[in-house]
Length: 492
Image 1 (cartoon, rainbow, N blue to C red):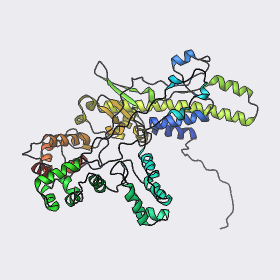
Image 2: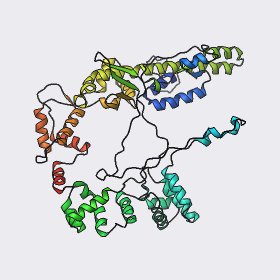
Image 3: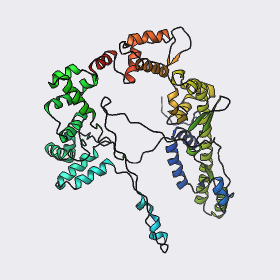
Image 4: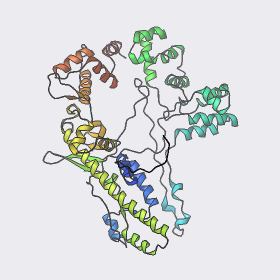
């Protein structure tokens, strides 16, 4: 059969995502911080876009009311207190010393500025701003004053780049030496010198080495303490008798050694600034109305308000002569209009999803985590007549603030555990909360095993397997019943 070219017409259907649709999807999954950054970029790129002025600013503006706003309305709510975040210790069984609080940066004294000087003579904004000293800057300053050779300072600079926020040097010395063309002995020599930098314990490669550096400075690093640091896993598990044997000390000496270790700082770099830290701001507020219902409203502070200046667009359009200028203005107008509509749709979608979550989990807001219900994306999507992927995007990196704290929207989607009597299923998070409560309230003479916890939960109507109890207990970082008994017996 001969191969000949020919033309054919075929009819078909295909989903084509326009750039505007892709933008709307992108906006939906952005966090409020990422959204602010995106809007700033659009304001710089599009001359027709401008930030909406508040009502007070609009009255004072000479051209107030000239721009026709394409805006969306959001619920208003007062600003909430900033969220306090506790960082978990690297060594959960070691209590670290209180971290040094960073001092406040001094403010610029403008009272001494001469009235004869212009603003051009005053320091620039970048000259008046000061920030917290970072650990890398602190180490670099000590490296400069250390008297090391240029080659050693170069090695030290590479080592500083490998230090994490807690002060640990995380790079492999052999790989680092190969990468910079030095011998491993040179790298280890510089590392040993830098381990004498402040704060004590910095540049260590692991927790035992960090604690050893601090004990050496105090003159308390002896063979018994060295053996204790080499067996921190036994300390965490409460094996007091085995530690006495390994360290060759009696019970009283071991207790003193443990007290010294607990007084050390396993995170020596935590007291330094780690760069710009962005706090989490809630996207949605949930408050109880006087009639007992739950009111859900958007946080207007995190919802950017932009508009398209129609007056400016009309003026510039009249003066545009070239076709490329007219095309550019047309694209800017189309993009501005679409952006405003996308922001409007994003706000409405977040509010719609949040209201359905609050409706489904009203027991949590009224009575706490023990009353969380099993919930998945499909249930919410079906209730608000949206696709599951849309709900998934809306709940990513979005936060809800209520009287019980700040929670990511995804927190309210929990797996279900069947009821023992065939009744309504239980939320996995609620069951985990029950397990924690049972262990916290257990009698010292009656430590609850995982099997006993299973029995108690089944008596309460929760059909759960022992391995599930063990998994939830481990996720809560709670030791087994054997380890809890051993700790009580040893007094550690």
